[in-house]
Length: 133
Image (cartoon, rainbow, N blue to C red; front, side, top):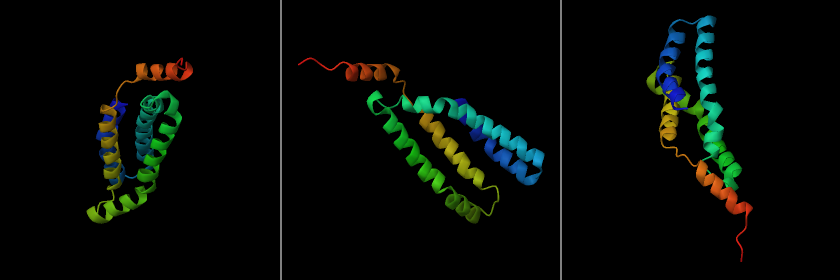
């Protein structure tokens, strides 16, 4: 995940600029395939990695709530932020700044993740075997 985010962070602005300066269908396809491939590399392990951050007994609720709030805020307000960025900077490549910000935030979050596999097994054992009175 970290490798994909680093590449996404580094390649987004140059690819947006390249397509802006040299608009063609082929350049757009190359940009889309590159960035979407990196997203695939990131999203593949993301669900499992994020799910492991929650105790087993609240895993689905925690993952669903956290993911949907993030999508609601950052995805829902994306048109507003992108329009604002274009207005403030005057650059038609400004949407890349929003994407780069997202990649940087994701990279920071990925670097702060902890391995919790052992904790999850303990939580499952505690729920599966009630304590004797």
